[in-house]
Length: 115
Image (cartoon, rainbow, N blue to C red):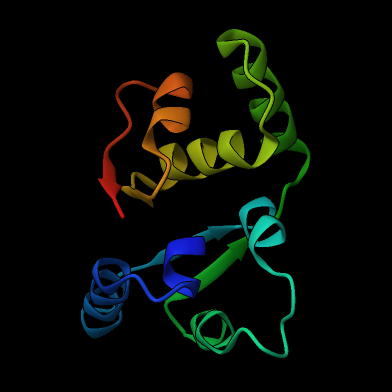
């Protein structure tokens, strides 16, 4: 989401294609919290969040347990990264990220598109 907010052409193109094909865009709430700083000025992000194909997934009890277990198993500590992995696994989706190494520590089989 940070790459998208910064105007990465690759990420903008990927999200435009997702929008054109009505592909689901899953945004873990923890990743959103890490990205959003000045919502009144983050126009791209606001537009993405209003998109009918985008859904923000809360960190509910089940996901919190999954995140905790994943962090324990991997020896890592980033809740947002682990929540991204939990959401991607459940939805069977690829993850678009500019930081693939951290996600690969959590799940080496995760399908990742580098931003």
